Amino acid sequence: MPPWASGALVHSVPIHTSRPINVLWVPNTAPRLPFGRILLRWEPAPAAGWDVTARLGLATTVVPLATWPAAGDDWPRLVRPTLREVTGLCSVLTVATAALELANRLADS
Image (cartoon, rainbow, N blue to C red; front, side, top):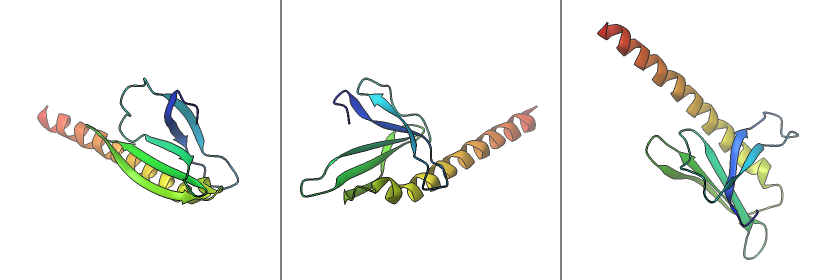
């Protein structure tokens, strides 16, 4: 990872493992991670492989999502299922929240 980056923001996680996980480098000076977005960070592990971490943006904070210590060179394949599940869950929560807010507005009017 470049020294000026805090990680890579996950844009999309294709279903097929032959396609790459789409990411965008995030500078150290970037504002807080938005709700439902995942930030990946990887660095060489002390012994071998890569130490990979994922952080998840929530409504009021950023929390650790997962850690894969000493993952092999194929670590994107390893982290893909977790990333797909969490991005899907966040999408569903966003839609459910919008529907609930609409229902509350309609009930108030």
